[in-house]
Image (cartoon, rainbow, N blue to C red; front, side, top):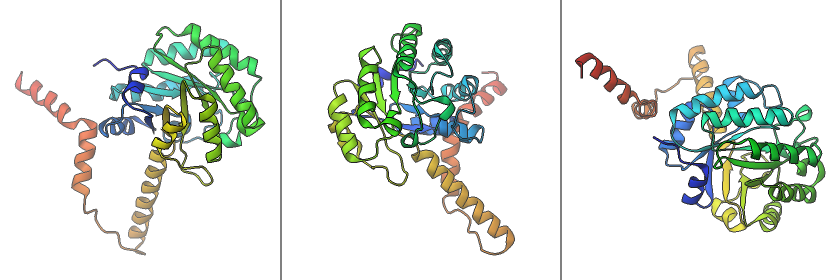
Length: 294
């Protein structure tokens, strides 16, 4: 089945809701839950695949290896974190070619300095000169082989230089041809309102983080502010980590004899849900057809 473009997904929902997938299973579950698209962020994928923080420790090859698994199990369009392009303009060109070969529907290029990369956008320590980012965006636009590939300019200037500069950069990235923009690290409802007001009229991304101090706004309200996409970068992985830690704590206590552990009452239902997500019925049918000579 042909994968729809990210632009097609944007036409089906406003604002477009994109949970963050951290592995192939979560990508499959996102599709089964009825979402139109998803996002792939460096932090979540690097945490689950490599067990490292997203502070510039991995490169293009690592991201491509991980995303290849995502792309193979779902037909949904997806946008991916591209960091700073993993180097200079030449590296950006290589990234674009590699991402498009995987079927990535779009990607976010950021102006955060790689040597001072922070996991939390509101803690960004430094950004590159705007001319450096402009050159990377132009390279990405000229090197894409598919005009449907969505190039999003992300600015982390708020944490380092303030909201005025972040908005100025976002406007500039859009002016030179970026298909959309994302202002990272917004801290208040007023920040979102101002960004929506000054950058509405084109693709504008918002991210809802489940961390202390970050605004938690409804997608409907963000859409009314002018945001066309709402991503949830932490919601799936935070809940997954919470559930795994709870289960392991219970198993440890059960094994130590310090606290009883009750058997899951919905274990069968969860098992069926997992089998469904993994496509077990499909694989069993292939096995059966092969055995019968069908």
